[in-house]
Image (cartoon, rainbow, N blue to C red; front, side, top):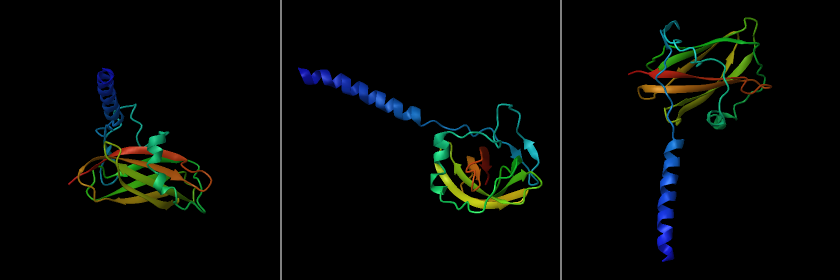
Length: 176
């Protein structure tokens, strides 16, 4: 008789374990896009005041964990700029290449490290990289062979004495 009492308990545990698994696999909303033309001018976006993509923000521990494999990036000789005035990703949507542009304080003449991770709506890392950027107008050319679709790019800026001094993300679209 005792084994029959265990069957309902095992069924309940199986159901609870299955529900927990799907609840933790949340999806990102990639629909809010800041669309920019080839010169970096904003076409569409910023309509939602709570939307703070492309601005300095704290990343969660799971978002920062995306960068774990990039922690070996050499930060020797890099310095932190006094301020980041703006970040622009253009064009968005893009075909194969896009520029990330960081406008810094005008007197900055050093170098800093950009680390980036492109994810899908399930937080699966699809492309990662790092690049050394310099001077007050810092550009990074992103080349991607991802299929067309909506993605999110997480990025951090780091220097030798201030790792991840600027962290953010933005939604991007790869077109055909």
